[in-house]
Length: 72
Image (cartoon, rainbow, N blue to C red):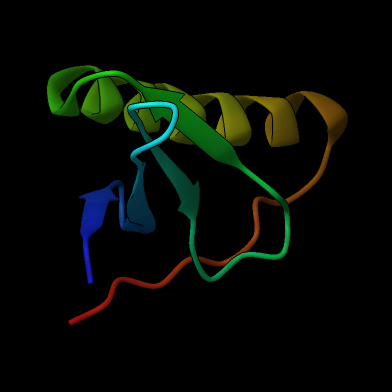
């Protein structure tokens, strides 16, 4: 399985051959937080931004970000 880790969040990564993009979704939370990019380097940046935006948005609306786990 292809995964990325950031701030103890884990994302599962896939590749769409038809659209030629990488896409991912933060795992182990029920809030739907996804991201995509054309390159692995850009995908990593997009993942970091998605996590940071998720945490910031939760803070702004007074919601506790969902617990996150890191796969071992």
